[in-house]
Image 1: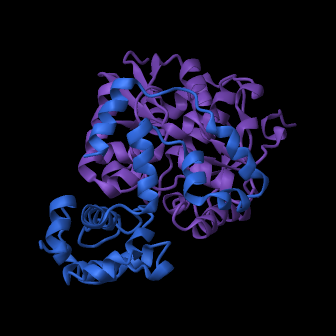
Image 2 (image 1 turned 60 degrees about the vertical axis):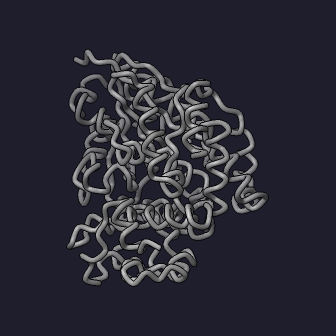
Length: 254
Length: 161
C-alpha cells in the first residue's frame, strides 16, 4: 500500500512529558506496516517562541529538520511542530492527515481487530486547521478526526470548544488564563457527554492533561487507534498521563 | 527609524493599511480583553506607529490560534503581525523572559523539555498550581533521545545570530 519511507518527527515533548504519544504513534505505524524511521536526533523546531524572536532563524531551524528527514516523507504528530515547519516552508504532513488521507479511515477500519465503542470528544485545537494554507481539513467544520475515530467504533460527540485554543501558547506568560482556557475545553467536552477527550498535538495534550483540571481523561489519538489495531492496553502508556485514565475505557463492553 | 507598518510588511508580508477596523478579529479572539488585548486596535496602533503603546506588550496575549485570520475580510493574518512586532521588539529591546528561557534551551541543547522550561519560567508556581500533578512533572525531566551533535552546533549558531 505504501512504498515511501516515513520519517517520523515526534517533537520534543513526545520525548519527555508526552512519551505515550510517540510510543503509540510508532505502534500504529508498525501495525499498519508503514516503513518508518524515528527522527529523535533532530533538533527542536523552535516553536512559536523562536518565531517570535527571529523569524529568519526559525526558518533555518525548520530547514535542518527537513534535512534530517533526508527525502523521506516527513510526518509529525505534533500540531505545534507541524505549524512551525509549514510556516518555515517545509513539506510536512500531520500524522492525522497521513492516517486519514494517505492510509484512509476505511483501511484502518479493515485492519482493526477490535472495536473501541467509547463516547469521545475529538479536539482539533488550532495549528492543524489554521491558518487556512496549512489546514488538514475544512478549518471551520473538519471531520477527519471524527472519521478516524468512527472507523474504530467510537462515537464522536460535537462540543463547543473543539476548534478553540487550549491556552498552550500563553502557558508561561499567563498561567491562570491558560488554565481557564484548558479547563473550558474539558468542561465543554463533559457537557457534551464525552467519556474522554482525544488530542492531536503534544502541547494540547500537555495543557488538557496536566492543566485542564482533571475532569476527563485526555488521550492521544494514536492510543485508541493502536488499541483497535491490536496493541495491548498495557503498551498504551496510559500510566504516563497526569490525569488518571480509567482502565474501563479500554475494556470490552457488553 | 523605519516605521512599524513597514517592518511588519518586510518581516511578515502583512500590509496593515488594508485593515478597515471591522473588528472581526477581536470578535473571534478567545483572549480579547485580556491585559487590554484587542487585535483590531493593535493593527491601527501599528499604522499610527505607536511604539510605546505596542511594546507595553498586550500583543503577546495572541494565542496564534488563527480564528481571526481565517475570518478577516481583507485577508490579514494577525498572528503574523504579532510575530513581526515581536521580532522588532526583540531586536530593538531584547527578548522577554519567556523567550530568553527558550532561546537559552535551544542554543545550549537544541531541545526543549517543557517540564524544565515550565519549572524555570514559573518556578515553584508550576508545582503549586497543579497540586500532585506538578510533582509528577519532575519525572519527565529525564529525556529519551538526544539531538545529533552537528545539528546541535548548527542550531546554536543560528539562534545566537
